[in-house]
Image (cartoon, rainbow, N blue to C red; front, top):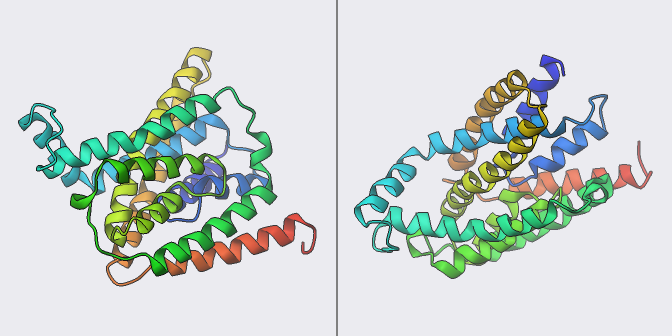
Length: 269
């Protein structure tokens, strides 16, 4: 894989992972609509892990509070402490995707990677985000979330295993339905990516390591470029949500989804 290909894939992944527009959909479309071959599992691991590192650095204060509060409360679920509450919310929110993801390991997902399915998912889940954001109230913060909220967001996250749905998009949509404020919704959903993506990357990485096909140089480059792009995307998202809504991302999804469907059904192109 050329350095140019690695850079493009890393930038696409990094910029779209935390914006509610579907990073997996963009990565698949990049290989389908360009001369680039499919990036393969190694590159998938690299670009996603770069995104996880970016989240950990951007939200380092939250992670530090989790560590501090967990040790001070001896790992008991003391919801009076913010870090302790956040840890158990993330733990509960990660369980559904872990179970569903392990089950999908033995399933053939090739059919779900078609441009038609990706196009419909980008469009329809974009419209769902519009209604959730427009009519969802902004009353609650992470401190107000409970086990039920985390479980519902975690169940919604399972849908992101279908390309085009968007992990951040569907979890933010569920958060807004649950009346969670926009920035809090984005923050929680980004933090939720840490156990979710790390677990998936470790599982695939272990299989590649056992097979003797793990390319450390490729992964290092992918992680580095994806990290840079992801930091930019997180900054853009959190900065924008101080003054704006998710509507610009909805518009982008609708335009992209409609365009992709027109192309997939042979109407244009």
